[in-house]
Picture (cartoon, rainbow, N blue to C red):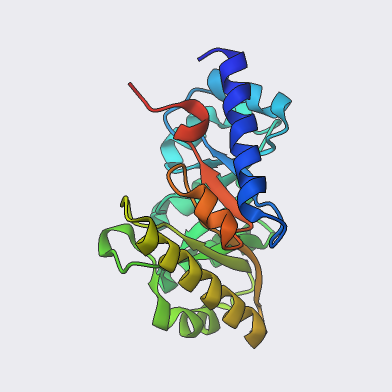
Length: 228
């Protein structure tokens, strides 16, 4: 892809996010999802004002880290195995996929050992898809209360991955339900569990996410184009 095409795609996504938010909510932060893309493909984004990227796999992230760490804040957005936490806790700005107590405890321990608190989001499961992980809606508050005392964590909000479907009405309902949960938890003002960030929306549905008040969207193929 040429630089001009990449810039055109980034500009279009930003315009669509602004239109979807429509003044009702702030325009969400655009996090470019960079899995499967080389550092050479990713680096031009920095000159287009994209400062944060999302990587799904620890091993891939580690290979690209030396080239990217000075240009971007990096989010770990994929499912994370406990034995991989120690490899990334000092290099990512946020872990967006915390969905179990053992994982939360491992991040807590590794962060404390590194002398830091790790910003995290709790991943929830809007559609109850077991293969995607995520805390069930009805268990989210209880889960937050269990992990909130862990001093190595800085809980910043929620993350959600919506199902792959063409049913826009169904998706709209899931986004609305997720926003309602976020607002309800924010109103509860749970100690140690700030509700500042709501990360939801990907290339197929980021406009719906913006319309329902996402604070971050994670966009890959709409920026880089589909893989051959």
